[in-house]
Image 1 (cartoon, one colour):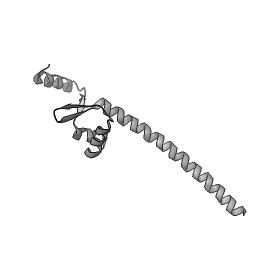
Image 2: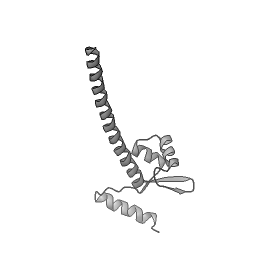
Image 3: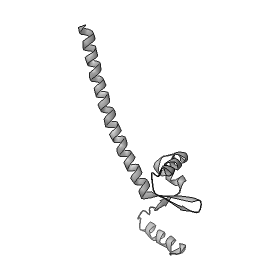
Image 4: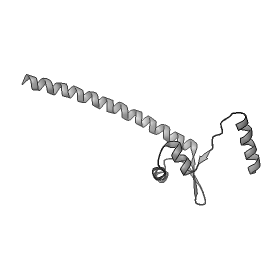
Length: 106
């Protein structure tokens, strides 16, 4: 197990080299800011098992890679939802045009 001084030394070296150091785990407060969810919603997602977590005593840590994967999945779902909404809007326009033609013909 590495000592905290060797970990901080490694962080300093990478920071001095301008290499961003990403934490492996985030606490719920940091994770909520990271993904844009409220703490309450984030804790619900933790209970639902949306991402991998680690517990140490009462402390809960969220795996950042798992959180990133969940965010990417949600972004993909939102893009799919947008295309469905666009298709529905196009269908509604066609139906309106047909109804207008029927009303003017009758």
